[in-house]
Image (cartoon, rainbow, N blue to C red; front, side, top):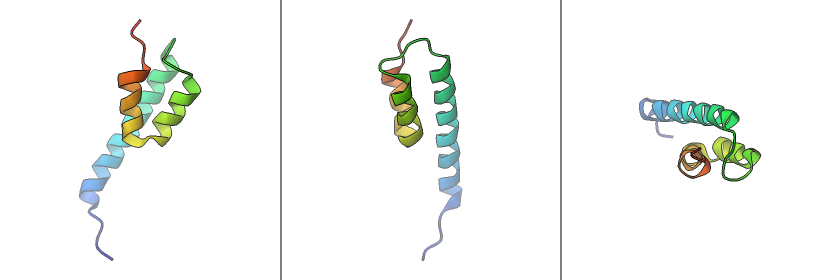
Length: 63
């Protein structure tokens, strides 16, 4: 089994977790979003980095 390059994977995991937390906080404070909030929460949590980016680009409504 090869060594896992934690020097590369660690920052990506940290970035993913940070963006997920920021996305969930933004979702909880948003008055309205495109679609149900519970669905966006699932997309943010299970969609990894892509789910959070999708929420910020397509899910938020500009009020």
